[in-house]
Length: 193
Image (cartoon, rainbow, N blue to C red; front, side):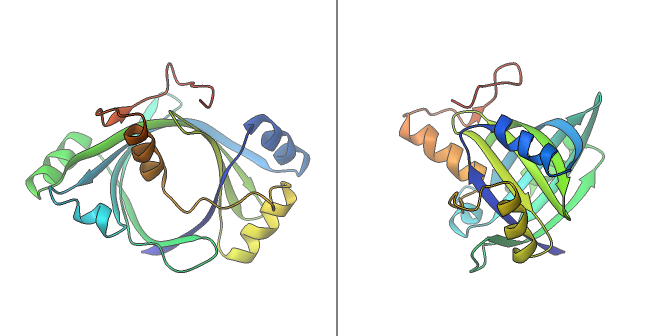
């Protein structure tokens, strides 16, 4: 079990951030399509408690990897900080069956394109999501390291988004009056609309 510490930033363009990453000497790690399925019980106890239970399919290089994650409530901090427990599962169908038997149903599903970089001990994710656009996440060992990377990328004035992608997409679906709980990038790209 560890604490996840990250800055989530809404940006206008991922291309500009990617140019800055290259200029700073960051290492490109990989590109992936991640499909996230969030689960909750009928009373939405996890959502109301600011917790999350997610099964992620991570597709890269023709391989699919599945990770089950629990995220605790956000802690008081300038950055998005919360307890996170995650582990790889070899059988996603059995994992979903187990979640159902424990009383959890799929509450929301979406995918995103993610380009991962490493810079000064931080993982920098350039994310493109359906309905809500493009974001940069900087995850690191501590707030100071994350702040330094944010400054290196000339993003120090961009406000932090404390909400999860699931909450942002859920809110946008409600705003649009859409009942579906599954949204996906079209052919892996959405253009940040």
